[in-house]
Image (tube, rainbow, N blue to C red):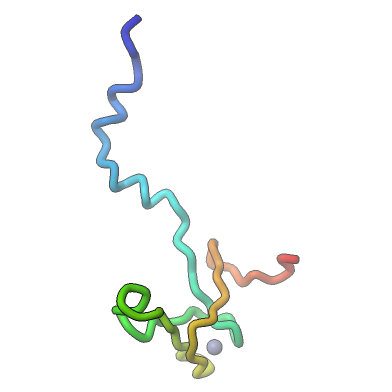
Length: 75
Ligand SMILES: [Zn+2]
């Protein structure tokens, strides 16, 4: 039997599929404000570290949130 419905899926660019994953947001472990990456090379040549513009925290430890809301009451 001839395949039907599967061929049209090959027309879509494969790179678009990656955007379906929810982007993880890195939050400050002290005040849960969004962290900024201190270096664009971080995570590639050197370990990525982050800094918080709100409380001045700097380091590689962060709280990760998948949906942008603070992970309160997650236990
Ligand atoms: Zn902070």
